Each structure stands twice: as C-alpha cells, then as structure tokens.
Amino acid sequence: MVPDIPLAWFLLFADATFAVGLFGVLTRRNPIALLMAIEIMLNAANLNLLAFWRYGTPAVGDGPLTGVVFAVIVITIAAAEVAVGIALVLLCYRRWKTADVDRYDTLSG
Amino acid sequence: MSRLRLLLGLAVALTLGLVIEWLLLTRLGPLRAVFAQVSVLALLAALGVVLARNLVHAALFLVAFFFLVACQFVLLEAEFLAAMQVLVYIGAVSILLMFGIMLTRNVQGDQTTAASPATYALGGTLALGLTVLLSVGIIAQRSPVGRSWVATSERTPLADEAGSPNEMGRAVADMAPALGTELMTRWVIPFELAGLLLTAALVGAIALARGSEPPTTPPAATRPARRASGSDSPNGSSQPVESQPVGAQSP
Image (cartoon, rainbow over all chains, first blue to last red; front, top):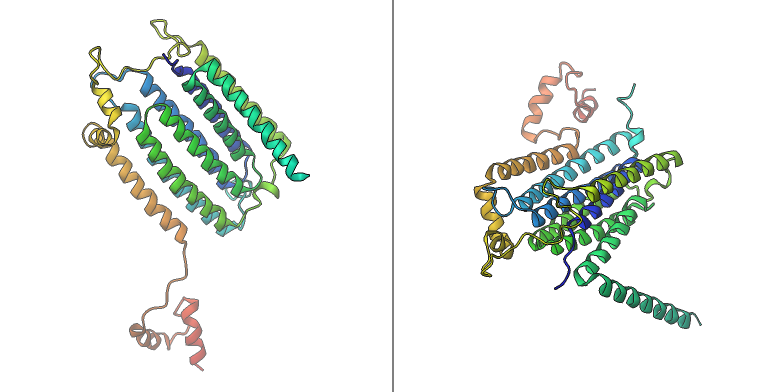
C-alpha cells in the first residue's frame, strides 16, 4: 500500500507559493513582473481548489466536478486579467515612456 | 584538465542526486517523494520569478513554475486541467508576458529601478508572516468531527465497495466530456458569464493597446469637396495631416 499524499502538504505548498507571489507583488516595480507574481498567486489558489476537490466530498446536488469547474473559471479570469493588464502596461509605457509603477503617479496629489 | 573537472563534478552531482532520491523514496514512498521534489522545484522556480533581475529570465522561470504546477495537478488526478494549464498558461499567458517585455523594451528589468532594501525587508516580513500564519492554521485545523488536514491522506473514493466506479470516479476517469457536460448543464451561468468576461476583456485589451492613432486621411473621393469648403476658411480643418496640403496650395 503506497502512502498517499496528505491534504495538508498541498495546502502548505500552496501557502508558500502564495507568499512568494505576494513578496513579488510587494517588491517588484516593473508592471510586467507584477503580473507574473499575480499569476503565481492565482496558481496557488487554483491548487488549493483542486486539492479540496480531490480530498473532500462535494455537497449533495453539486455534481462530481465542483473544484475542477471552479479552477477552469479561475484560469479564464486569469487569462482575461493578463490580457487587459498587458494592454494597460503598453498604454502606460507609451504615455510615460517608463515601465516602473512608482513613476505612474499622476493621480497622487 | 577542465574536462576532467567537469566529469568529476557530474559524477558527484549524479551520486548526490541518486542518494537523495533513494532516501526520499525509502522514507516517503513514491507518491510523496514525487510530490516533495516537484514542490521544491516549483518553489525555487517561483523564487526565481520574483528575484530574477532579467525579466526574460523571470518569464522563463515562470514557464517552469507553470509546468511544475501542472505536475501537481496530475498528482491530484486532474490530468485534463494539467493539459489546460500547459496550453493556456505556458502557451498563451507567458507568451503574452514575453510580448509585453519585448514591447516595453525593458530587458534589464529592475536593474535601473531596484527596490530599496527597506521595501525588500517589508515585503519579506509580510510574506514570511503570512506563510507562518497560514501554516499554523493549516496544521492546527480540526474539523467539527475531529479530523485534521494533516491526517487526511486518503482521497475521496472513486469506486464503491463492489469496485465499480461511482459518479466521481467516472468523471475523473473521463474528465473532458464530464467537464463539458457539467459546464453546459449545472454550471452554465458561470460558464456563460466567464465567456462574456473573456470577450469583453479581449475586446477591451485590443481597444486599449491599439491606442489613439491620428485619423487616417479620408478617401480620395471626398477630398475635393473638403478642399472646396475649406478654401474660404483655411483654419476650418483641424487635422494637421489635412491642413498641410491645404496650406501649401492656397498661396
């Protein structure tokens, strides 16, 4: 009997990955690097959803694939987010000629 | 001499790797050993993404990270989602990010705009604090019936006592059609909303990134009429592209 992976291992891994992504968002100043760090955080969340799907029991009437459907929706949202994000970065780069979020400070008083 | 050193280094690395592999396999069993290695590699790749100075290196680390997360999906028996992860994230998102890097021509990354050490300290403290907080929560968690996540190491069964697959087992074994059916019946409203969002986001992205170019010159058929109406008031045409020929011909 092969010992299976405990649920907590997946959760701890997703926790550490999310923290790495958060660190990136807090320290990076290039907007594209920020988008990359956000993608890391989204992936950590997705892993959590799938782990709870595989180790838990779906509620009655929710079908057998709750977590997978949730993860698919998250992947869709992530793709939309990164497309709009890149477009905004390109627009900001064209207007201010810089790729540094600290320099996009027109709205700060 | 250098070749000998290279061979020696390779042999040492291979031996060390084999020893570590053997230790992991005998201590943890195959599944857990694979999980441990994939996790360590994925964490290293994620750290590479947030720490790499060169943005192209960061993007390549991100590709490695996506692939390793796809491996985790396989470990969770969601092979279809792993394929989706490879297609959507590695195939589309990272290429899009590469395009962004290329178009902003900032290959040097943060080299010229490095964050201050205070920012690094603050970010590191916050991230580490979050990790510790969540880890304590995960390890100390108890469900109302006393089951903990640490002790939960058996998955939801995919077959009943007789050995025939149950509803979840059938869905896991043949996930693409099952997922399609689920998306089209039970989860049709979230599915349609996601499709609407994706359409709106992509159209918006194109509209944003195209920018406001100067309007194209009107077709030749409308030109004489414009020029005739604009001849009595040369300042009437506001477009600089058009005012140039008008101004050149009026004297």
